[in-house]
Image (cartoon, rainbow, N blue to C red):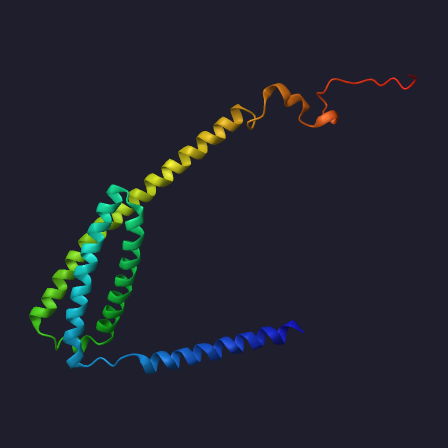
Length: 180
C-alpha cells in the first residue's frame, strides 16, 4: 500500500527535476565573444568589491559590531555567488576567454590574486573569532558544571536528606501511635 505512494513521489521528483533542467537550460544566457569582455570586466569589479567587503568584515570583527557584520555577510554571500557564477562561465568557455584582450585578462588575474590573499586573511580572522567564542563557551559550561557538582545541583545542603520526601532512606524514621 505504501510502496505505490513512494514510487509516485519519486516519479514526481524526477518530473520536477526534468522540468527544472529544461527551464534552466532555456533561461541561461548564451556567452559569445562579444559578451565575454563585459563579463570579464564585471567579474573584475565584483572581485574588487568582494575584496573591500572582506577587509571591512575583518575591521568589524575587531570592533565586535555584530549588527553591521550580519548585513555585510549577507552582501558578501551574494557577491560570492555572483562571482562563482561568472567564473563557471569562464571555465565552461575557455576559448572565448582567450578572445578577451590580454590587459583585461591580466587585470582580472591580478584582482583574483589580491582577492585570494584577502580571502586567506579573512578566513584566518574568522577561524580565530570562532575558536575564541568556542573556547569561551566551553569555559563557561565547564565552570557551571563544576559549580553544580560542588553544590549538588544548586540544592540547599541542609535539605538534601529529604530529597525523596518521606520515602527517602536517609529520612529519620517516624512512628505512628494508632491506639490514641
